[in-house]
Amino acid sequence: MKLIASLVALAIAAPISAQTVAVTHAQAWTLEGDTPVHDATILIESGKILSVTSGGAVPEGATVIDARGKPVTPGLVNAATQIGLVEVSGSGDTRDTASADERNAGFDMSRALNGNSTLVSLARADGLTRALVYPSPSRFAPFNGEASFVRLREGVDILDRSDIGVYAVIGGGAWERLGSRAVQWAALRKVLNEARPDARPKKGKKGKVGGPPGKRAGELLIRAVLRGDVPLAIQTDRESDMRQAAALARDFGIRVVIVGGAEAWRAADALAAAKIAVILDPQANLPRSFDELGNRQDNAALLRRAGVALALGQVGGTIHSNYNAGLALREGAGLAVANGLSWIEGLRAVTVAPLAIWGRGGGTLTPGADADLVVWDGDPLEPSTNAVRVIIEGREVSNRSRQDVLAERYKEAR
Image (tube, rainbow, N blue to C red; front, side, top):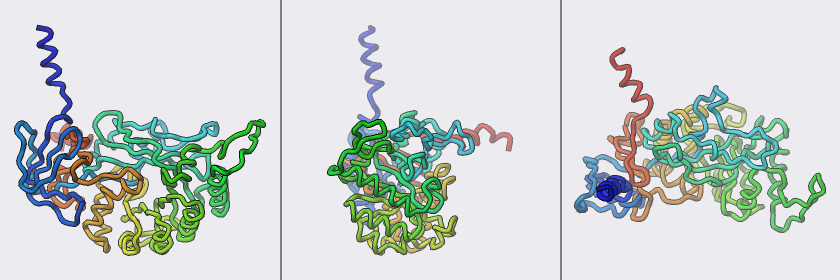
C-alpha cells in the first residue's frame, strides 16, 4: 500500500515543466521577423518551445491556454534594474546594492538577491520575466562590482546567472574621491592595462608578487572583459564620455555597453563604429544633471537609425526602474515608439535585445528557445494593457502582486 501511495505521490509531483503546454489561437510575435504568426499554436515542453505553428494541432493531454487571438510575446527583459536588491530604498536594511567594504576584492551582489521581494511579483505581473541587476557605486572607483541576470520565477531563488559583466560609473560627481573625470578614465585604463596578459607582475605593499589588477573589484571578470567573454558596462551620459568609451573599446579591443546615454545620439557615429550598445531610459526628456543637457526623447530612434544596438533599462529613473520595473519598461518602449522608433524595434528593445547585449542570447518564440512568454490582453507597449498569463521556464506563474492582495483585502472598506 505504501508503495502504491508513493507512486501516486511521485506522479502528482512530476514537474509541471515536463508536461506539454499548448498556447492556442495566439497572435505570436516570435521576433524572427517583423510580423506575427496568426492563430498560432505554441507548444511547450520541459521548459523549451517545441514549435510555433499557425493552426497547429494540440497533443492529447496537453495543458491548453487559449490566447483568444490576443498578442503573445517573449517575456519582457529589463536591461538595467536593481530589482531583488531593493525593497524600500530609504530603509538601509532592505537595500543591498553596494559594497562599503574595502577589504572586499570584488562585489558579487547576487548573494543578496531576494526573490520574495514584493517588487519581484509586481514586475512579474507586468510581464517581466528576466532582468539585469547592477550594483551601485562602491569604494573601488570607478568600479561598482559585478552585474547579474535574474529570472523572475516564483520562490526566493531568482538568480539566473552571475558574473555577467563588470559595472563602472564615469561622470561628473560620480566618484568624488577621484576628482575629475579625466582621472576616472585614467583609473579605468590603468586597471585594464595592469590586467593584460602581457603586463609584468608587480610587488604588492607587503612585498608579495601580486597579479594584476590587485585589490580591485571583479579581478577575474576584468580579465574576462579583456578576453571579450563579458562586457564592461559604463554608466555615463555626456557625449564626451561616450566618445572616450568608444576610444577605450577600440584601444583595448573590448565589448563596452553604455548605460544611461542621455547624450548618446550626439555620439551615435562613434558608438556605432565601436559596436557599443546603449541601454537607455526613453522616459528621460529633461536633464537631471549637467551631463544630460542634451537629453531628448527621440534618442532611441536616432541611435537605431545610426545602427547602434539598443535596449531599455533604468526606465523612469532610479525609483520606477525598481518599483515599476515592468510597467515603466512597457511605457518607456511605447514612448520610444511614439518618438520615432518602429513598434517592432520597441518590442525587440525589451525582449531579445537586452539578452543579446548582455551575452545571454535567446528571447524569441522559436523551437528550442526558453519558454518565457506572456499572453497580453492588448498591445504590450500600452501601459493600460495587462499580462493575463505569464509563463516562465515552461511553467505558468502567478501574476498576482501584493497590490492585488491588498485591494482584495480592503475592497469592503472603499
